[in-house]
Image (cartoon, rainbow, N blue to C red):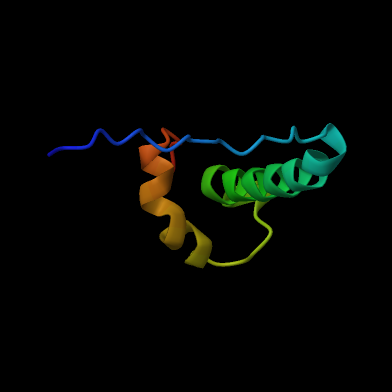
Length: 72
């Protein structure tokens, strides 16, 4: 004889909201990181070059074209 089985009660953990104070340092860190990456992909050559030579240009060349930055 089949016995009906009641589904177990599913409880979801309470979500605690994050404060702006908790997120701000991480947002600043990743913002600076992304701006640095954008600089090296978009402007690290020519008159604004921080590093001499063509090594940075060669490393980011395909990403530069993918993002629409001219380099030739």
